[in-house]
Amino acid sequence: MNRFDLDSQVLDFIRRTERFSEGLGPDAPLADVRLAYDRMCEGFALPHPAGLRRRDGILHAHNPDRTLRLRSFATPDAIPGRVVLYLHGGGFVVGGLDSHDSICADLAAGADVAVVALDYRLSPEHRYPAALDDVEAAYDDLLDSHQAVILAGDSAGATLAVALCLRLKRLGKPMPWAQLLIYPMLHPDVGRAIAGPKENAPLLPAASLLNYWRLYTGREPEVTTDPELAPLATQDFAGLPPAAVFAADIDPLAEDAHDYAEALKTAGVPVSLHPGRGLVHGYLRGRATSDRIAEAFSDVVSALRGFAHSGISL
Image 1 (tube, rainbow, N blue to C red):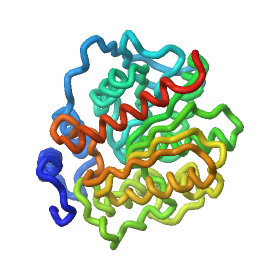
Image 2 (cartoon, one colour):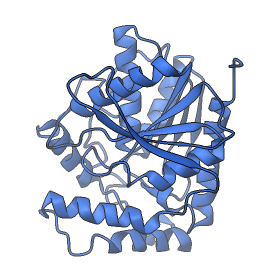
Image 3 (tube, helix red, strand yellow):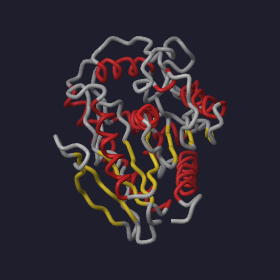
Image 4 (spheres, rainbow, N blue to C red):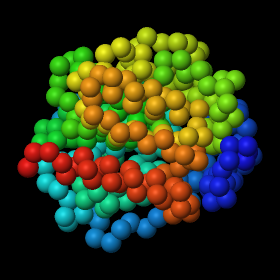
């Protein structure tokens, strides 16, 4: 594993993470996989910052056929008029409001902005584009009551954030204020990391990406032309919102983040790229156990604060 030049604290984070899935083979029942993931997230959860308010609720105004569960986080000093719609990771298959509760709480407190986490539908019970449809409905609801919505997410959630931007552009709907993306999956060839130098990266080997694709789409992996499934399939990035893109260097998805940042830059969209040197996929959970991860998380918070408190006065 340490052929990737991981420092000792990141190595400890990886080992601790892997212990939660010991005994689960590639054909393990999905219920067992989800339970192990939830336990792992709970094992890394931190107490909420003092003074933070948390509230569970539902959104339904733009989706009369079903309700969408959400959880909001805010400090008393949260900037008015702006909100972050946070989309959790988990390969479109695992995760929910509890899995990223601690992360959302720290983002809200650190950036002094309200954060709303969405419990979008998971695959394979609800395949593409169900999750994206839920994200669009939640975005529309939040935009009704806020002057600006910032999209944020990690892994699959970051993918959904970019996909929503492209859908909004296609439909001619208002754009988010900004996008904050953490190790997104964006390339139209989901298998491009196979046989590459990061094929067997810890915590997210490239083969896992193929399995997530199968569960999310119900199809065998293929090179897609659908930008709402794989955003780098599009050739037109003009007009998308400013972005902060955070890669994990030791991750088969690292090139996705770099390619997206370069595409935005070429299209004239303001973008910052954080390469995440020495970091692995899923590093957000390790912010209290690794100095390197803590520094990266601080950069995420700073970028979010910058977006939330910049521009026009509200």
